[in-house]
Amino acid sequence: MGFSVDSRMLVHAVHTVSGISGETFSRKFEVFRSFGFSMDECMDMFRRAPNIFRTSEDKLKFKIDFFLNEIKLDRCALISWPIYLTYSIEKRVIPRYRVLQVIKSKRLLQKGPSFLSVLSLSEEEFLRKFISRFRDDGEELLGTYKGNPLDS
Image (cartoon, rainbow, N blue to C red):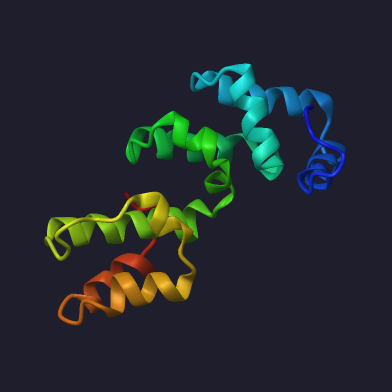
C-alpha cells in the first residue's frame, strides 16, 4: 500500500484494514471514485489519513459532498489534507461553517480566514477567535454555533 515500515501511519493503516472486509474497503474507494478522485488520489488520501476508511459509506459521502459542493473546497485540498474528513460533521464542520457565514454576512472581519484553518483550531481557540471576540454579536454567533447542524 506504499507505507514505509517506519511510518507511524502504518499502524493506523493496519488497524483500519484489519477492521473491515476487502469488499467494504473497495466500496469506500468507490465512494471517493464517485466524486471524481482517481485511484492514485484515493491511495494518497489513505496513506495520509487511513482512519477515513473507518467512516461509514453514508457519512463519507455526506462529508465529501459537503466539502466539495457546499463549501466549494478544491478536491486537491482534500487530497492534501484528508484528515478533515475525520472531523465530526455535526459537531465541528457544519457549526463552524455556519458561524463563518454569519461573520461574513455581517462583515465582522475585513478578510475572512480560510475555512480549513478554522477547522484546525481547537475548540477553545475557535470560541475565542470567532465567538467571544465579537461582543455585540456573540450571542447570535454562539446560538448559530450550538444550533442543530443538520437543520438546513
